[in-house]
Image 1 (tube, rainbow, N blue to C red):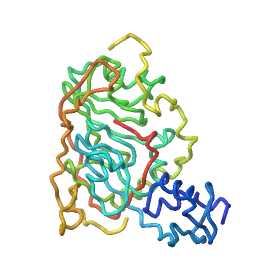
Image 2 (cartoon, rainbow, N blue to C red; image 1 turned 135 degrees about the vertical axis):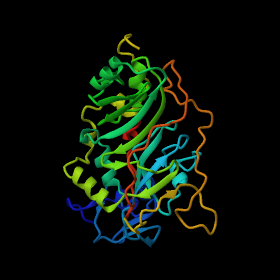
Image 3 (cartoon, rainbow, N blue to C red; image 1 turned 180 degrees about the vertical axis):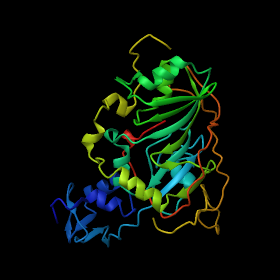
Image 4 (cartoon, helix red, strand yellow; image 1 turned 90 degrees about the vertical axis):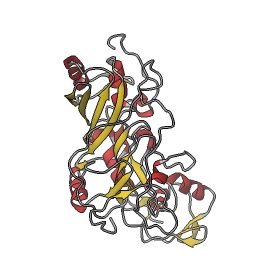
Length: 344
């Protein structure tokens, strides 16, 4: 077994083939069901493509080609890979290979989310220290004031920290455009609640250079080759290490506990040729990417703020979409660290 810097931890190496998650790979290793070069492997072993890895007595298949998808998540879909949870995002997208979301959008929120099987790109995009932009259209329960815009943009005390300065612009009587470089738990909703407002709809329209465009709720497309190339250039210097996630990201913000009142003040494989796909289970005989009725119901859930506040919100997401979606290309995506996913 190789132990040099050019190797990968065994659990990650196994999960990247798409047969299971890292956690499941850890269980297989603990149970002695994984061998490397004919020997039962222990936890923490590092391997490379030169090593012969067997799982349950069978050779580990080759790592699949990376996949990257752009998905317009409807209200009511939960960003989890747990198949036991109804209306989970994996079942909703119903992609032919194992994928997982990059970050999260809350169940009552809608809009753009990326999915992949490439864990490294997930880590680089999500780490708190990497400061990649995420853009949202957010409606409130009452008219937007200049003071609200200024205070939202300057930083708000939530989750034992002060949010980083962000770009906020009023685009309607009760609607703002907000661009974050941070991903705290229910950040926008908590910020608004601290200032005495409640979010009635929240829609993400952009992540870095990827725009929602003309995708309808429940539809997905592949990330285009040009989009992927630009992403890779943007994250070229990004850290994918654990240390990056600790920068200006307190434990409370990472874990998403109750809001602490700090003041009483204020309230890549096949090209799709640009075709859009509707996510959802496919009937037998229907090819991947065919349309389904993916309008997700929010099951009567409130579209409001965090549970620990007295304010509750309601209302569908009606944020305007951005420019036309670029032609789709190759794609394939990975699973991210759930505790550190960005949320709207």
